[in-house]
Image (cartoon, rainbow, N blue to C red):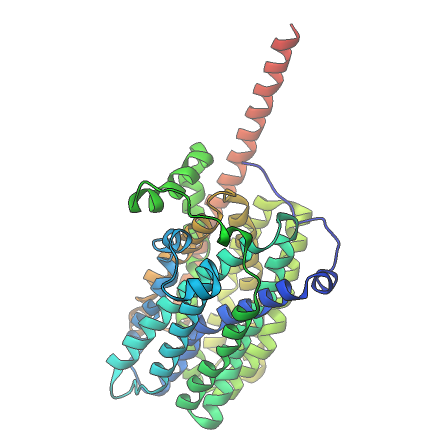
Length: 443
């Protein structure tokens, strides 16, 4: 394992857009489309559930509707290897699956819009579950398109473009949906989000087809090989550090996922309106997150990957104390903005550092499948535990809960420090071995 730094190419994203507007523009719009579904089945929807007087412990359990995002590695290899029915002939291998997933997202959003969680929760659960599966599938297919559509030297810029679009998508799914719900109701909000998703379909129609999509499928021994080989290759390549690295990835964002499940109920319990929440968490929070994103790239470049990873896990977990502080202070708009700013900045910083780290671990041959595996791994433990969050608050308090999620980051930070030091030792050992080999050859 070796440390990595941020890319040193200084060419601007604007220059790349001017030289290849169709490809970069499609990456921005497809990134936007991937940013919409997750919040609409998670954070934004929890405000609707709280308003509908769904019990707090049930809201915590319904955070499990995003489990599809954590298990997307299971079907990701098959989307690489098999064509979408009908649509593959019209749009190609990857774009065909993108269209299928986007149509499924639109249908699921319309279904959620016509739900009534206060009186018929089963309907909302059914379509929310479908929305989670469709959104996760869209993530897989768009990532596959982004990785394969551009030459390697442009991959970083394609990723930056997609990330910019993603953040705008989350802004619309967060602030936009909350504002619409405040003024026009939740049905109108979700129907509008379904309409906005058609922009993703338009981008898919215009997106260029990856060169690899016109090549014949590689021969595979069967389903089991398709699923297991990317995992085996990653494990072999990570060597003796494999288990520790995978545990670190699994635990890195766990406190954040658990905390995030109860952030919206906290804000609603303090009697902030949908408009207040949208303004602070989404509009103000958008710029705060952008600052954390930019800082993450600078820190990785300045201090290296593993030191940045350690800083990220400490900052990300410690920031939950700001939410505990808000819960203790009560309804005050300035305190609200300050607490959300601290938590949002640290979350964005930690998230981007983790993305850079996971991207450095995957191989070229299995990039899509292995990246889906790692992103699922980093989200699964926290999402499973998030289901207990409502029960914990029911028997304690918001203050105790957020202090507890902050303390959960302590053992993860110790593991990050150990992996960092161990990798340095292994690197020195490998250097000594190569030096000894060269000496022996000289003799």
